Image 1: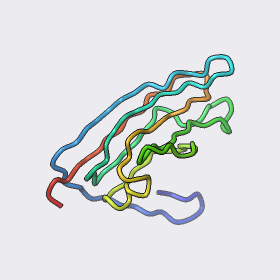
Image 2: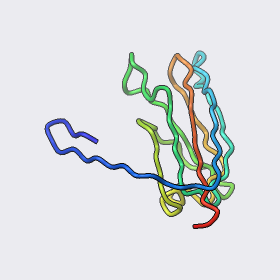
Image 3: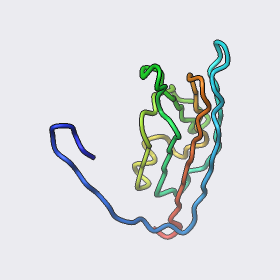
Image 4: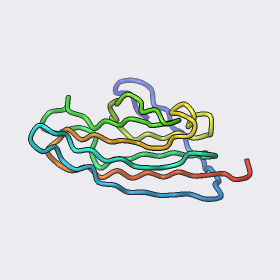
Length: 127
């Protein structure tokens, strides 16, 4: 990560997992006054890696218009928040910050173009 006019922090490494699931969904574009929305069902039980990446996070014509997501965990849907860059969580405790386990991610697209979302969940069966 590079801060303009400031420091840079570099990190690398590898995370071993026994199994993974990879998903791709398309969040439709806004139609009239209705935002596009897509739900992605997943299970983070025992997950040690969660990566969420989008083809675009903001509307290039209106940077204040941003992709949003909400987490459902324990049957309770959370409040939608802006997703302004890739979400990368490493370690079971980090993933549990979203809920335990995460059951569903709901993406809301207020832009005029569809957005593709890629997710990767890695599970270490023998921590």
